[in-house]
Image 1 (cartoon, rainbow, N blue to C red):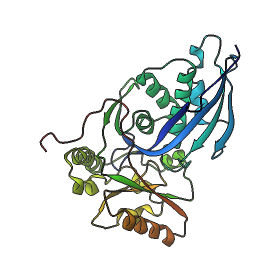
Image 2 (cartoon, one colour):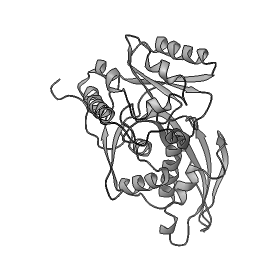
Image 3 (tube, rainbow, N blue to C red):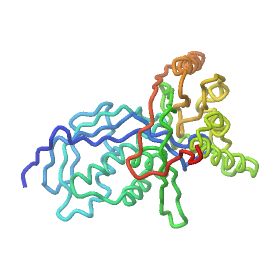
Image 4 (tube, rainbow, N blue to C red):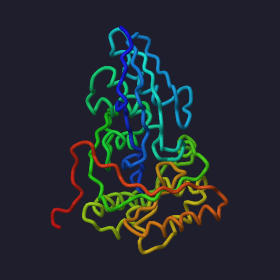
Length: 310
C-alpha cells in the first residue's frame, strides 16, 4: 500500500509526572502540564516497522522510549508494523525526575494504537510497566490527575485515579544537571526499620486524606518521608535546605521522583516561593529552571478526593 498522509492535528500529547510525593514511593504520581508531543507526519504501510524521526527537540537518543513503546506490540500486527515518520517536541527535561522516560514510552504505545486499534488501558499500563520497571509515572501519564498504583503477587498492576485539587500547583525547580534513575535507586537502603516504615505509612494515608478534605495545612507533614529522600540528599544537595524552607504559603516540599528536580506545593505566593527556591541554587552555585505548573486533569473516570461532608 502507498503512504498515508496524516493531518496536522494528529498529534499525541503525553504529560510529565511527579512521582512519590514524599512517602508514596513507587505508588503515587501526579500528572502535570508539561508535555511530550509526537506529531505523525506520514504512515507508510510497508510492513517494515521503522520509526523515522524527522526532527526532535530536544534530540532523542538512537534507542528511545517512543521507539520501544511503538515496537512493544509489534507481533500483534499481521504483515508487520507500518513505517511511521514523526516529529518530537518535549517540554519535559530529560533525567530530571519528571517522568520523561514514561512519557516517551506512553507516546510510543499511543503511536502503535494510531497504526492499529485502541488497546485496553490495562494492556497499555502493563506494557508501560514492563518497559519502565515501575508503575507510578506511567500510570499518571496514562490517566492524568493523581494515580495510586498497586502491583500484586503475580506482577499485575492496577491503578486508582483521583482528581487533584485545582487550587494546588507545583513550583518545580530543575537544576542544570541530570540524575539517572538507576543511580538514584542504587543509594536506597536495602531494609527499613519498623519506625521508619510506620512513619511513611502514617503520612501516605494522611496525604490522601488531606488532599480530599481540603486540609492544605496538613500537607507539609504528610509529604515527609524516611524511605528514599534521606538517602538521596547526597545526590541532590539542595534537597535538605529545600525541605527546611518556611513560608506561610508553602504547603510542602518533596523530591520529584528520583530527582534531581524538587517540587514545592502552593496555592498562592508563587513569586515569593520561586525566589526562595532560586536562592537555594544560587547558594549551591548551580543553574536552575523553575516552572510554575498546574496538574493535568484526569482523562478517565476518577474517584473524587473532595470530602462529601463539606
